[in-house]
Image (cartoon, rainbow, N blue to C red; front, side, top):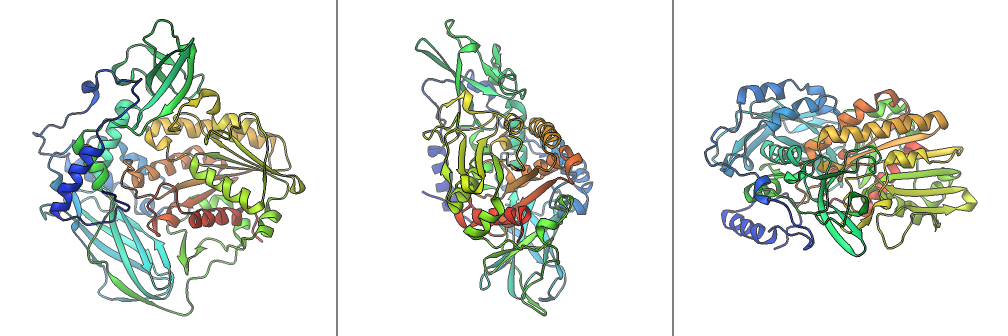
Length: 562
């Protein structure tokens, strides 16, 4: 059975078949050369005796302490305060006690169906569990978006959690015509708790291993950002080798191998959630609410026009303080709300914008797609560079156009970085390491994107990575004061096998970037791609080429404008 999207409603027979399929397809797998130690000691057992999920009063108070402005914020400022409360949630065995889209309700707050262009439209939402009982606590993460199929238009909104099972959704009337309002339960509180309690205990959601090799003697051991992973007593501390960021791997059992014989790393898709936990993480998310309200928007003009301010003239700091949505699609074209996109994409405009640029894209495969798009658009030639190997997708990439004096590079961030294959340790360097080696050029631009891989670890660990980047950016600005730096924010994905509660994690990551980069916000542009991808119901971890093109054009509008 193949499931391509997560927005669905399952009948009881189908649910039974899906659960059977999950059990068969997701039995633990691993490299034959690597065995976990005392697996039964770290697989969390769910006790059927738990009846109370958590303390309603304290949890609801936590949710209510989050300001309405933070739910609306493009970059979260206070959501991290809720993290410990999620960790206090006990596991559940009766999955019908979890919020469900099939029984939850939504209705327009005002008894009217016609709105004016620019209006804020409010939707009252009540969550119910699988027994049809109303929830009396908050904490579930909801999405809401406005959509018009006939006009190929869509816009993300935001939802305020009242901490008692009720929510208020907000969408803005940004174009005229007939629309529907869609809402989904993007991440249940139980899903968030399961994943993050596991991560806090083991450091990572998915397995990573170190490979040791000497004189044809080989061994693999588990790794994590935390020492003593999975009950191992003897560890190799590779923090220094990971550029000062935590990294620990089990010492080889073979006496002929030492920590100095570490040759490569590898990331697996395996995890050690129990079957009920994995079912919650896979199926109890992105559940569409029934009866999407239909409205009509009237007004002068086709859509809300942007301010008369080119994006490349907009103060950087404003990008950290926007309210969702930062933009919207209309007739398949992305429109910013905070500034005017004056950049018109073409090969000529790309060449004009990127002339004399040293453009470094650092992160994962979701920014390597930027490298490929720009290289193809500008017809660049791959340049030989130390550390660049065609057979390794994660090795450094460099391309040039000498007539434009243009250099384009892409590199991955430090561990934890999941390659899916044995990656020589010298291929994985830190973001800070790369930034510190940028040559002094007239035009230097750096785009940073570290999301999907490091989203598998704890918020405290992610903060250390962001802080390390911040210090490197500070050094870059001292060397090259006119350098441009962009943070590519997380994008939405609803792929069923993405176990991470991404809607929750992205808020945490936004706040950590906001806090750590505070002193540089007037010099760093934050690129919000959540609103762009949530409103189009993006499914896959890697968005379509058309969406990638929109993302890059959005970036180019800030970099160059006309």
